[in-house]
Image 1 (tube, each protein chain N blue to C red):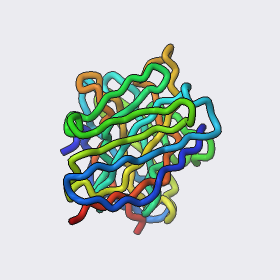
Image 2 (tube, chains in turn green, brown):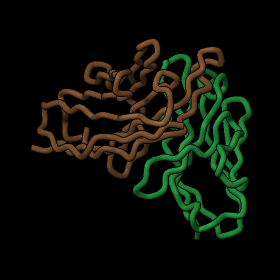
Image 3 (tube, each protein chain N blue to C red):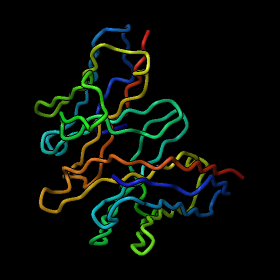
Amino acid sequence: QSVLTQAPSASGTPGQRVTISCSGSTSNIGTNTLNWYQQLPGAAPKLLIFGNDQRPSGVPDRFSGSKSGTSASLAISGLQSEDEADYYCAVWDDSLNEWMFGGGTKLTVL
Amino acid sequence: QVQLVQSGTEVKKPGSSVKVSCKASGGTFTKYTFIWVRQAPGQGLEWMGRIIPIVGMTNFAQKFQDRVTIAADKTSSTVYMDLSSLKSNDTAVYFCASGYYDVLTGYHRVYFDSWGQGTLLTVSS
């Protein structure tokens, strides 16, 4: 069981806005910056959001991140079929001295 | 941003060891930190350990402490992950990833923007 909690699944229709959440604790999300990764089927993970809310170049502005206290969220607006993937939050944990990955949220575009 | 190329598919017997390599190119090797992450079939990402080559520091997930070794060869810009005492539930895809590490801003701000293609390890008798 992961230290970071994510809902196992989420869904939406094309054009909709969906939100994926990630819950942690003071030793990880509460203290350090959080990153989000997107993993398409059969592919390696790809950095989607870093530093809580920063997009790497090439990531559409439909993707946005936020953090409040010990929780964080990834929002995807204008949902597209190619957004169907697994999404993972990740953050360094100061107490465990380990990288923590959330359990992942499988996003289905209906 | 560096490019990472991992070694190929491995098939091992229970009780044996495996060594997976991850060669970096396109950047200054010692400016980066590397992690190893694995993904069992149908499961999520699981962090195994990290290395900061410039200082030679390593940390491992508690569950792998006794079985994993991570090393870096600065001359060939390659990171290695050794996993011993293999069991069938070590069957997974193993990924390396790299992130720029600035000692002034702190390790907790690292993010991993380059990933290897993954190495499939099958452990079976």
